[in-house]
Length: 217
Image 1: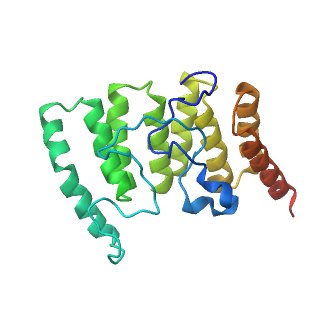
Image 2 (image 1 turned 45 degrees about the horizontal axis):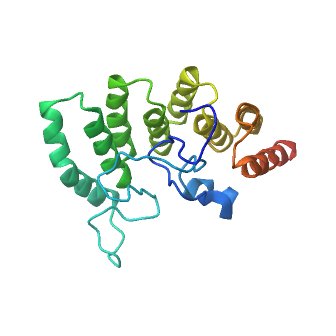
């Protein structure tokens, strides 16, 4: 990832390239994906748009259909992943196919399965920060908060100024560990190392929210 953040910054594939969804309500963090910060994200995806949102049903379920159970979504993901898994039997180190399989499971809210495929992709290319941050997000949503933090911290070993890693590190410290002080530290480092960040007002607002929480009895 580049040191500055132009419009085509290479951000993790799980995030929407267009919008910062949590602007409408910071306190609704648990209902949105972590790290909608920078636009211009190229995606490893099986769909044309490449969009993956927790609020949407996975592909293959028509609109108006009753909300499926997680088990039904798992079955759908397994079916959609079959051709990808067949490719992986021929070449288990195919990074692109591993990541595509991860997104199939992530779009179906099967976050542990998705994290496993992201992990295998990282074994092929451990320096791919986009994949590592994707994996961190899946670990967070599967309940492994400490594992998510470890992945973000490892990303920062490769690129200490990576904006999305720093932003997500703050969010997970704040909401996952109830550590507003740690969150503020991460976001202040984000602003310090990315002076041209176009989302600076948003980050400053997050810092203010965390400071208010830290001051509350």
